[in-house]
Length: 126
Image (cartoon, rainbow, N blue to C red):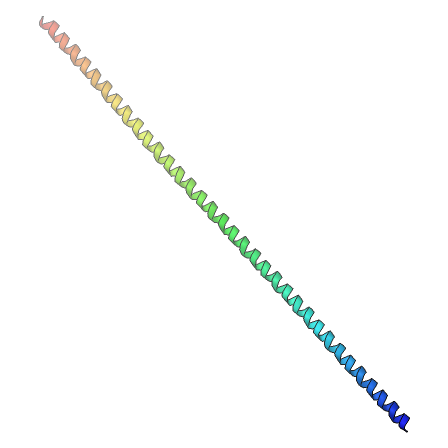
């Protein structure tokens, strides 16, 4: 009987140890699963953060290029307007010079005609 009781006690002790070992193994596997999940979540968070940063950088670059193109267009329009005004002023100056030349020619012609008329009058008097 004592041997039977001892044998039962040993079997009970073995079952208890096995149960403890199985529980410890289950807890370790659970902890490992949670660690891997946390690692995957952190990796995903970092990837999303990197993607967002890239998106913002691309948006900023697109905006910078649009602003540069708009500035270039504005400068070109300004230069074209300045050129138009300069050409207009040059044309106005050319017309004014042409008018002065015609007036001077007309005045010279009138002076010569008056001189010729005066000469003719003097000759007729004489």
